[in-house]
Length: 196
Image (cartoon, rainbow, N blue to C red):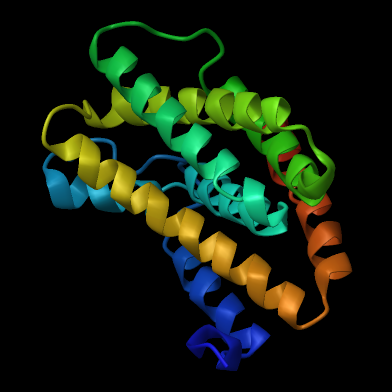
């Protein structure tokens, strides 16, 4: 038995919910003014929209077929890096927060169907979602140079958390409940679109 197999489902969920407690709901990006590698690493944990997107990508990977589990996280991280670099270079994508909300509206339902999605769709959606989130991070942090790897590592950690949670849920036979929750996560995107 692998070590994570021993962790009960509630224990896995307990890893996610404390992170949400630190993500203020009133302001999506309260950590906008920091610099340095540690702050860049922690930044993905500081806004509920980014936190949810990172975990959803991990859940998507966990719902994917074994050979395709790398696709959504790698595409998202590449898009994230590209979006951050473009923002630092002064290129602004249209839509900003609305594009982030739209990504949240779509990521959960797509993750719920991950096993049946074509690779091209997974890669394109992951990269586009990463691009808009990277743009926001880049504008907030001025992510460049030495701090970009720290920023990507923090994001990767949240992907890994979502992935581990999805695999644990599958081992417990609760995949249907996870898919319902993933579809329901679209409500966060709808709420952000309405609030924006």
